[in-house]
Length: 59
Image (cartoon, rainbow, N blue to C red; front, side, top):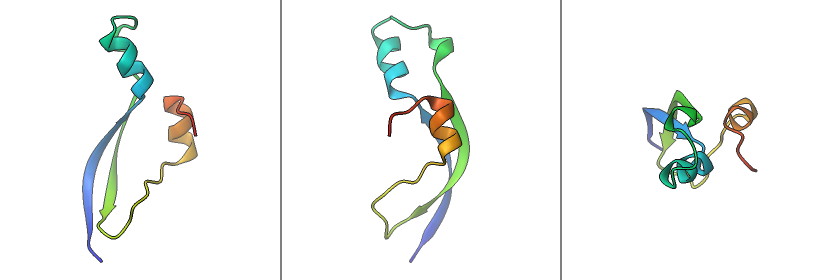
């Protein structure tokens, strides 16, 4: 098993869609910068609940 540590920027994709349609100011894009691990043997992504709430993501 190989793990790689990387910098990650998570964004609210709905915000990004609205920005692309010029319905939301780009300054309002909700993002979260962090560091994470990539495990080459996994197929799922885990995101802490506080980040989900911060970005207003749907589960």
